[in-house]
Image (cartoon, rainbow, N blue to C red):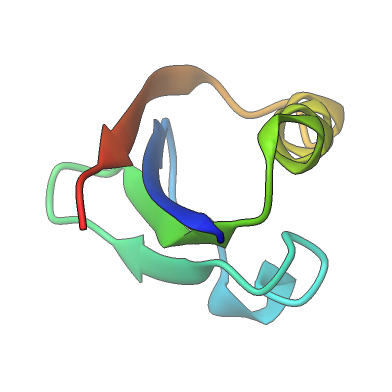
Length: 68
């Protein structure tokens, strides 16, 4: 069963990147950062997603697992 995560990154990420970021919902925040939120299948998928964020040269601010 997938776990929902919220990932905060520095800068505004265009929502067109959602598909490449495993379908995560992208919200541009007023403080200039972006929130990526959505279900992640397992730890391997989470690490893959974090690698894509790294490849985009985004500043990782935080990762939070949300309880269902």
